[in-house]
Length: 167
Image (cartoon, rainbow, N blue to C red):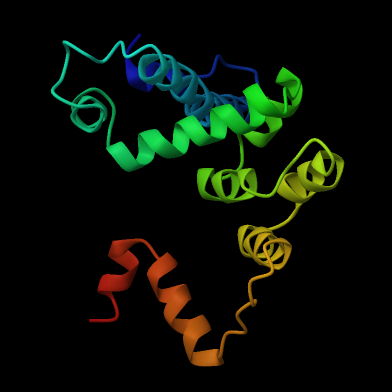
């Protein structure tokens, strides 16, 4: 299928609604990719299936995936939410719409005993609030940002084209 065909909507339908539904579908597929990648990478690593394909596990990840670090994140997310917590697919699909950093960091604190508390936090809180909750759960000090630090952080969240306007 040609890529632009995804944006074609037959006449008589609410174009905006159809495109929102398609966008949500692609977001879900994209988010599930971290879990699928984690499952595949987990098996490659556990069964040493990478041997003979690369000189090391790290070089395999870098040549066949994206990077070693991101491969490790995908594996941690898969192992925590699928293998250890055995969350239902419906919950995984909802969590897959979160950013992978929040999922990865929460994997360190979420357990069978507190999963009922953490899944709603992951689904409903903003990323910064999730990170703050994780720090508190780990006994780490939470950072209070000054006004200047908030502005600097906001600057780095802008797209590079938007940041260029400040130069």
